[in-house]
Image 1: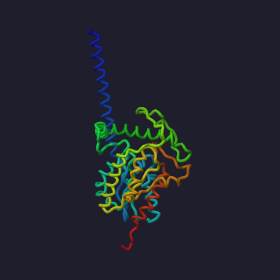
Image 2: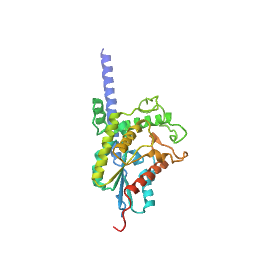
Image 3: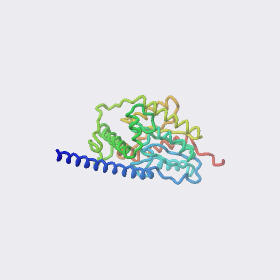
Amino acid sequence: MAQRSRIGRTLIRGGAVVLASLVATAALAEVALRVSSLFVAQQSSGWRPGARVRVLAVGDSHTYGGTVEPHETYPAQLQRFLDEAAPGVYSVINVGIPGVNTAQVRNRLALNLARWEPDVVVFWCGINNAWNSAETDAATPAGWLDRTLLGLKVYKLVRVVQHDRALHVAAREHLQDGRHAVQGVNRNTKIVPFFGEVVMREEREVRVDEERVRAAMADYRAMRRLTERAGAVPIFISYHLDFERFTLPNEALRRLAREDGFTVVDARAGLERVPEAVGRFTWALHPSAPIYGEVARDVAQRILRLAPPPDPTF
């Protein structure tokens, strides 16, 4: 009996040491992620001197351009297209943040408008609404817990990896049609991900959650309202594919374009112009540089029409 008691105490102490080690590791990881997050947002020294039309690009990783070089992001390529049309007139700043949902973009918009005082704001966000419930109304205890935990960088990282891996695997299962295929396989594209199993759907079509579509529409409407009140022109971009989690924001933007007259650049149109040899998607269906380039081309055309270069005599 005494021996069993000693063994029990030893196991308890060992478990406590392991638990303490895990907590300490998680705490250190949280600190490291918070420090590194300070350097995630695109850095900018301000508007280009002499520019008379200021274009602010806000949104998620599709705006930030996390899978391409800084000069290959759509805002960087947008700057080049605008310079070709009107040298020195336009200035583009990229304030995209990977992982944000539409509620987070909406909640930070007033600050961005006050800080940058843009003439045009281009929005590209919505894909992360499928997993990121931060700053939204959580209707269930599970939703409230998830929203609360998303305040921790470590938990958010796990959720991002789960989301991106599931989307990437789904793409490899269903989008190998010979055109715009997913770019090469690496050790992170296995069917069994690091953070648990990916549950694949058999059907190709994904039913859209009507409640989430309406919530996204409300966020988009708030973005347009705030932008117009600040005297700027709002432009929205839909995603390239009506597939998996992209379906929700695309459906919301289609309805707003039809019902409320939103200015929406349909990224699918540009995708069709990209040659198959270079029209590849990268991790989690992020566009490659040539695909971003066609988005930038279409956005530039909208800007030149909605916010043309001012008369130089004024």
